[in-house]
Length: 558
Image (cartoon, rainbow, N blue to C red):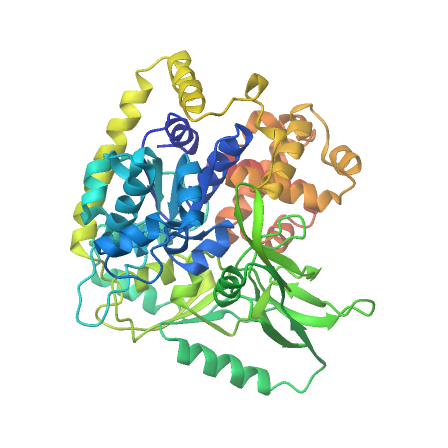
């Protein structure tokens, strides 16, 4: 199923399980849907199964939203107490759509508890009290954490899951991995078809080609991460600076944000320190997981300047993380979006796209750890495997069986909607919004409000100008941005599957056929990851923008 097909199904108001492999674009589709709901004045609760996941999407944990908190069980007394909390009652009754991200890590018992709270508070016996419920995630990722001695239950094993009759939207696009061999390996893990050749392949990953930075080492345990980062920082006797996190808003939510933010409350940096960006900022040129090295501190404001793996220098300014509800910020923290990155846990890497990583799976202790670690990296050339144990590549047989079912359910949903007229689907969209008390903006224009995706809106502006047949230089001038930033927008639009070859045909130079032939040949030999090898492989006869254009068009065909 494509991203656009999944979005169409979401807009009908049915309960949906949105899934797909890492890099398929689940978060992109989710943000598009949330943006549409907000533009239509429909109240949506954005939650996640863990605090870290919640900070990524600007929401709160499902535990906090529902009032369940840290409870493992929900007695009649507990349920009554929650139903008498004015804040919880107001929140749950006002909500029309409930989103729960990273559903793989939510225990099925807790999903049943959320279902009960919604039913009681809303006075409605339908699943989740009649809310449209959207669950997002991939069950091949990390599983729920169970109490010692307990067995976890997956969300799909809950009574609430069965009663809600979720439509499965399995996105089959891929926008992270660029390496066919790595994709093949990850697919084999998901099908439990690991052979000796796969271990041999990983055993051959002993070197990483990085000109400017070291790879991040992925560990299974926090103690290993902390020890390595502390040791490596102490080795440096270079210029240092410390950045303190600032915050405002509700104290409990503030503490939750601080605890789950990937940047520490007190960030100590030194020049030559290995760092990782912890937030997306496409205009500045980095994303959550971009690796770099601190090269200096700005002479005017003291903020760190990092050099990325591509040799680009970026001044990293403070960023904010917040918890919002109905477009109102309840709590917000601000910090330089960096962390020391000689090492990070596999758990905290979930959701990141890393350029390079050293992966240590000798102590892998649960299903999914190996898969999560390997799927963080875009290519095998960006991966160094330090060791594997016998269980490192194993996935839960129960998940494999369910994944087959999810694929079938998704195909059935796709076929059902393919047989419907476009007008009928749009009517379903309108009916859902009206039933939710909202209103679709005139001509379906959702750009009226861009509260959640300011970065998304900047891409749309670039895309709109591109469709007017304007050049990159003209777009950059009109938007008061550097041409390299606009090229970055185009690459991101292509990655998200919303850019077509016809959109860029007016950019093709007169020598296009020769250019494209030379660059695609260079990509076949060197991969498309870096521009410099392509520039050198084509005899330095084309400028970097020509090569970026050819690489962009090549990505639209693959």
